[in-house]
Each structure stands twice: as C-alpha cells, then as structure tokens.
Length: 133
Image 1 (cartoon, rainbow, N blue to C red):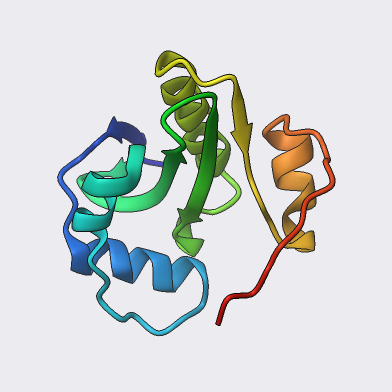
Image 2 (cartoon, rainbow, N blue to C red):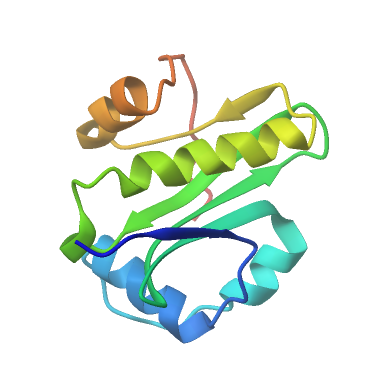
C-alpha cells in the first residue's frame, strides 16, 4: 500500500475533485466550480493524495465564529476502509480548532452513523433539515 499524504488548502483542479466526488458518491462526474467555492466559503479543505493522485477530500466551512461544519467527506472506493476518511475528518477538526471554533457539526445519512459517531468521535444530537428545492 502506498503512503497517503494529507494536504491542507491544496490547489484544486475542478475536474479532478468532481471525478473523485462522483466516484465516492456513485454519481455522474459533472465538473463543479470547487476551487471558487472553496476559496470563498471554506475555512479549510484537505486532500488525501496517493502518488499525487487525489483519493480523498473533506472541507470545513464555518460561520466565522464558534461553529464549523464538515462537508463533502469523500474517499475513492479503491482506497476505502484504510482510515483515510477518519484522518481527513480529524484534519478538518484540527483546522477548525486552530481557527478558534468551539463546535464542529456534521450531517450524515444513517449508513454513515458508525463512521461519524464511532470512528470520528461525534456525538448524536437532534437536528432539523429544511428542503429548499
């Protein structure tokens, strides 16, 4: 197994990140304006690289104060079950802590409960969701 390098605020190639996201979420690879969005809205983003290939990603957005939010945690299926996702979330938490945040939030689907609660250390909370479109 090759070693994985974690890079904070790496230069984003929209096509490459869109392809990773599609592979991780079993979707169609449609190129999104990731670099522009991240520069504008993210507190930090972290990439996991294997031999210069992007194999994992996470971003932490924030409210400019006490709260940060984990978004878009993705690991390429070929690299799953190796702890990469957990290390990405830990890096996002570290970046949020360094920025002075007190809380790190995450929303997830039920099949990811063990990952976020057991592997990453989040605790369950009540939350709400409003569909806008």
